[in-house]
Image (tube, rainbow over all chains, first blue to last red; front, top):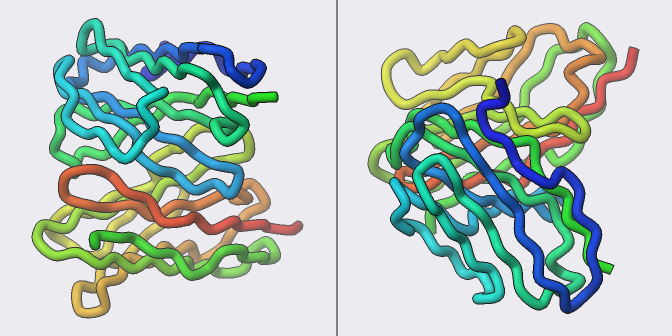
Length: 114
Length: 110
C-alpha cells in the first residue's frame, strides 16, 4: 500500500489552463504539506494543513489554492498556469505538526507548462 | 533567518570510497535535523533524523550523521559508498516546518 499517493504523476498543460493535483495519505497522519521542487532540485514548502486547517501559507502566488476536504486528503489547484510553474510538486504528511517525527513524501507530480 | 545550508553541491566518488557531506543550520531553540535521499526520478526517503540524545545517529543503508552543536553541523557519513548510492542528498531541519538545504548530488562510479 502506498502511504502518500499523488495523482497524476505527470501533467503537461498549456499556459493559462487551470489544473489540480490530488494527494491522499493512509497513514492516519494529522498534518499534510505541499512542496515545490524546481529544476535545480531546490525544495520549498508552499502550504501545510493540520486536521483540515491551514497552518502554513508561504509566499505563494494566489493562483495556487490548497484544499483539504478531510485530514487524509490535500489537493492543490492552480489557476492560470504560467511557464514558471513547471516543477515537481511533492505532497508529504507527518503524524502532527511537531517536526521531529519527520515527513513521509509522495512520489511527486511533474508539472510541465508549455 | 532560520536556514539549512549544504556546501557540497556535487560530489563524485569511486565505489568503496568514504563519504562525508556537510550540513550546517542556523537557528536556535529546539533543533530537529534530518537527512533525506532522492534517487533519480523518485521521491524523498528519510535516511536518518536527530532530535535529542546521542549526537551520533545511525540510519538506513549504512549511513550515519553526527550532530555537533558547537559547529551548528550535522554531517552525513558513510564509510564505503556503492554505485547504488548515486542520488541527491538533502539535509533538512527547523522547529515549526521542515526547510531543506539546496541538496548535494552524489555520483558514484564503479
